[in-house]
Image 1: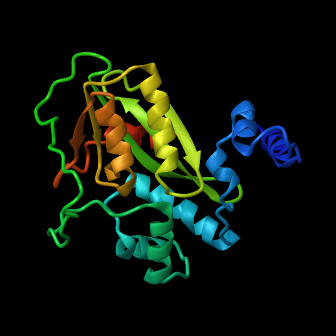
Image 2: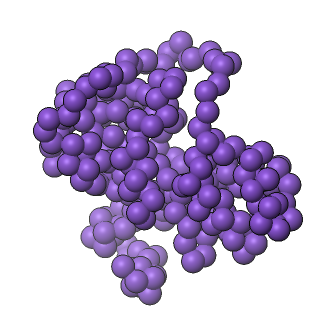
Amino acid sequence: MLPAAVDAKWALVESDDPHLTIRRKCELLGLNRSTYYLPPAIESEENLRLMRLIDEQYLKTPFYGSRRMTAFLERRGEVVNRKRVRRLMALMGLEGLHPRPRTTVADPDARTYPYLLRDRVLTHADEVWSSDITYVPMRRGFMCLTAVIDWFSRYALSWRLSNTLEVRFCLEALDEALERGRPEIFNTNLGSQFTSREYTGRLEAAGVAVSRDGRGRALDNVFVERLSRSV
């Protein structure tokens, strides 16, 4: 959708109409209600330029953390320090993929799930779905994209954009995918959005077995990453 068309729709949402709620206006116009209450993600032009460089390099070398990413930018002639790069990568939801010691203790109230895909050979659609979040640079600012992918067909069942990393837009994508059908297994990483009780509760209520990436499973969501590269 063209930006002008989106702006025109938001103008209708903001119009003073006592007969329609904000929720109903967004439903009728096909807009994400959560973004109405949230300010846009704003960064300086210089930071946005650096974030695009970081994003491009991260897709090539996802094992780069802030230290190696800083060295990469410095080799390109950029004047940056590690603190700035670390902040921008955190803002984008990027973290270098690497083995690490277990230094945190899980919340005793959090539900843990086994990894169900070891040595599994996929034979049909709706056998395994997966989801992840990626950063998408825009002309002005950036957005976070989540998608639900069928592992066998590589088909994107649903997707949502958001200007924050809150769980709501992940839930909306999941709900839309579940309207199409339901998988035997749903596999995700350990992101807070996917480990939240709201998210796992949706899957359990639908009778879906939840599979969780463990240590050494950095490539389990490779199909979602491929979609991210295409975007």
